[in-house]
Length: 158
Image (cartoon, rainbow, N blue to C red; front, side, top):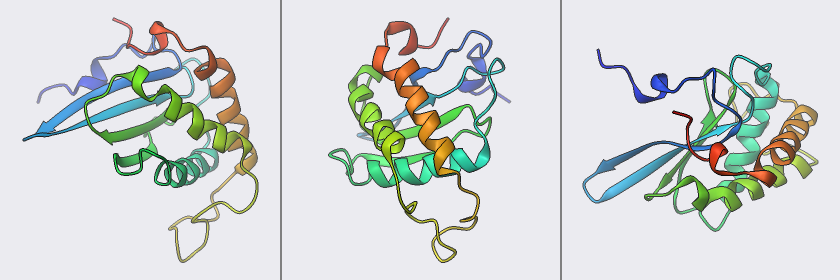
């Protein structure tokens, strides 16, 4: 089998950032997948499941109500729990969505109250949430990465 592209990135050199993970085209439609890397793989603790689940609910809600809502295909966690994927319809570069991702994580960092979709009728694991840790991690991602983002945090290391 062919090795998939995401397994060719050297995760020992990968830092928190906002990267184009892949582009896919079907006919005239292009989708861009972004790697929103919240922690440094294999060097920092992974995001705990309740916090990542909360980030997913809040980010998906924010993004599907944002100015880009018609382009949002998917937002969800990475299996390795070091970040999330954002998939948008369109051909984008990382720098094109920095503002959107900053706004999304600002929303998460400042969020208080009931988590959208955190009810038994709405979610298959609604009790597995941690808003305080989601707030903390979103703020950390903003302060350490998104507010000071540069080229080395926008393009995968070679």
